[in-house]
Length: 476
Image (cartoon, rainbow, N blue to C red; front, side):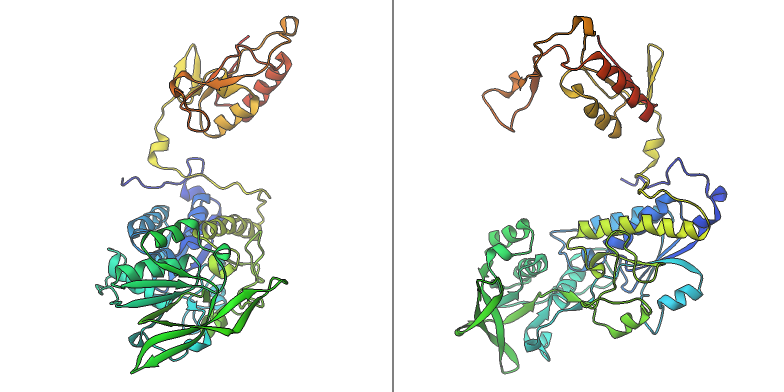
């Protein structure tokens, strides 16, 4: 649509903004968490924000590990471009490393706050796969999905590589979203048959239902209760895998039954057992941040702060997010507490409760107000009486959503109060014979409110105080 994002109209011009908003802020990794964090910081008014990304493309895992048929690169890049509209800078091919940038060197360079959103770059590889290579038929999800993405996502990078050539039978190990992405991608790369093999049962699958259903529709086979035990290699190629049957004990622990061994023939194995932060150089570059027993930075779940107050982390590396949406929320949450931290350095007080700016475009600057009977309405969209204005909270929610005016349900004075009022909402005549959630309309057959005049007078007063630009009128 080519409609840019703009700063909140309530912010002062960049030249007049306080010094704190010119503080240098660095973010590592251009994935969902960092893009979210940088966007909200820019909306707050910060003008010197830089994201450092070790790859040549933005988007993080959303770009490199979610296939094009599920998440086109244009969608991911759209979010990055909206962020750049606010002045956020992205430097590609540069990341955390002892040979390059470290937390300590950033401090020396004058950065006031840092957000780490680099994900978990290395695969969690079972010991039985050590030494196996792609040319032998073994991939991790971190090998396979980026190859698929770079070959199928136009505009992602300058490379023009073909899709991986997958022939014959494929075994995908794991039961998360990534495992099912590997399975459906393998089919598109030429696999004749795909088996998704996992250690536990169907009730323990971590993937969202849509992922599993897609794999089922595309004729992937599911094999539960199997734990990998051995890879069989002949002539330099994988030809089979051996599994041991798993069962859940009464204590809830999973055990392996050595008497039940299963051997499956296969040509390719894709391991999707999750990811880890395993690069010692990256970990050393984060010094002096403290790490937990899972090898990840210790992160406060509320503020997203690490053991170093000026360093924040979110997304996969924070150990709290399991989905893209949760990673985005990590970045959003961190942005507010980064804002509070930076302002405290300059002696400015900030509200405890988050007050993040909304999304604005030039369209929001267009005046669509109207004037009727000497009353100015911020916009011509309002609520009539009866069903949508039965109570004050209903009107409040409408004003929060941007509606311009509301007409309360008719009420009577106390001297004329109707004692047999009972709110009754029935299905509308346009619904035909349909009952339940599929109805197209509703009717309110009560013509007067069951609430008192005192209730409505107090409610309208409170609404006017909280929403001075909206118009609230009553009917008596």
